[in-house]
Image (cartoon, rainbow, N blue to C red; front, side):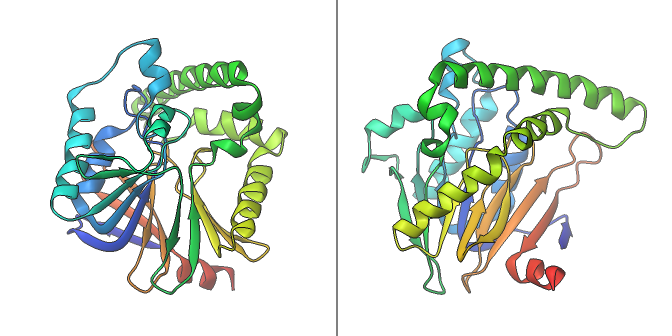
Length: 274
C-alpha cells in the first residue's frame, strides 16, 4: 500500500474514471477536482455515468463545481490530453453521438485499450450486463431512488459520528453490499463482464457501473473496476510500464484540508497475496 500526503502532480500513461454523477448532491465533486489537480495523463478515459441525467430529469441541480469539472477536463483536452467519454446508463443521451468530438472530448460506445505492455483491455461502462437495468427499467429507477435515500441517511450518520469522535463509516455502502451479496450480484456481474472481454480476445476488462472498485484475476482475465466518486472516490491509473494502480483519493477537506492518496498497485497486491 502506498500512502502519499501533500502530493505533487503525478503523471500517468492513462487514467480511468467513472460514476462521478455530476448533477447529484451525493457526488463528491470537490474531491474529484482536487484529484484532477494532482494527476495528469496522456489519456483520460471517462467510463460512464459522469453526468447523472436521471437525477437532473427529476430536479435540476448543477452548482458551479460541476461546471468546474467540465472545464477542467476541457482544459486538459486543449493542452493535449486525449479525453475519451464512454457513456453509461445515467448519461445514455450521449450514446446517440458515437465518434463525435465535443470540445476535444471523444465519445465512444466502448474501446479496446492497449496497455504499454501490449495487453489489451476492453473498456465499457457495464450497465448492459446489469440484468436489472437491462430488463426492468422501472425497477432500476426505483433502486436509484432508494440509493439516494441511503446516501441522505449516510450524510446524517456521518455528521453524528464526527461529533462523537467516531471514524467515518458508510451506511449506504454497507446497505448496498448487503443487498448485492444477498443476490450474489457483484460476483455474477464480474463474471459476465470478464466473459465479454474473453469473447473479444482481450486480456482484461475495465468497467464501472456497480460502484465497487477492485482489481483481480478471473479465470485468466484481468477484471478492473474503477469504482465511483459518490462514496469511494477511486480511479484506475496505468503506469508507463503497463501496470495498473487503484487510487483512493481523499481530500480530508472536512478535517484537515490535507490531500491523501492511497494507491494499490498490481505488483504490491501480488506481493501481499504471496
